Length: 322
Image (cartoon, rainbow, N blue to C red; front, top):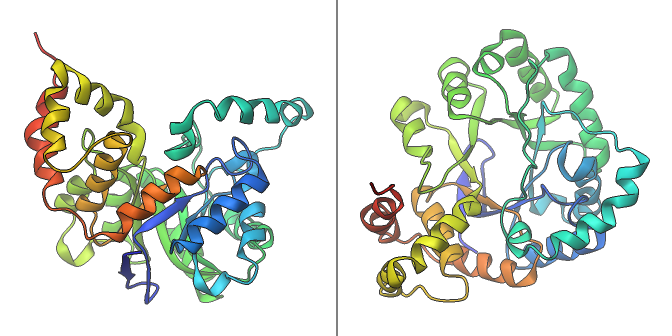
């Protein structure tokens, strides 16, 4: 597994990260634990979770996985979107939801739909410590490597009380680094205002590039460590483009050694690594075939040809024709 260096943690981590969004909801605990262990065996050491993920159960399941492995992995959890309280009816229907999800392989190989709800309320500094201590309890650990503000507004990220509380918790040893996981405007505002923010977790794709925008807005001295997600959100669009127009684009992609059955997925993942070569790319992967594919791509050095290919051939093909 290729690794990257995270200076604010002073350690190397896997370039491929494990997104725990569906863990506990679409994915059962036994299936999730098997997937976590398989990814760990393949070299994955960055695990992304939140109190709200998996109907509120992801942190507890990940905590079970961490036993005997804690010092060998990095955990990013979040503050901002509350942990949900499930009704008895939802608990009873969850097995049926999982059965339905198994018919949608990309849901388990990519990003789970709807797992990232927008935070519509302002964050409050007084709520951070209780959220962190509850996460520590569920994760069965005494520290969090990275605490991310979850879908914050720019105003949240520049709030002096929030920044002060994050600094206090870091001083107590509860958290080792602070991230912003949300829109680029929030990341830009936070990085410009407070030195405590060292990591930006952002959605990025060939059709909605964000990293380049953040880099252009921040000076080289204030660039964060980047974690990107929603890699496969554009899978269906790219798959249609590859087979459209008589397969012209697919034929061009084959000249770069892309082919079935994971052509679109491999191109999107390679592009994600290419535009974020020194950061982490997050994917949710609970199917063994997807884990194998993702880890195999993560072993290689980032390709230098995929981003120009996307820019020259794929993006023009996606433009509407009049």
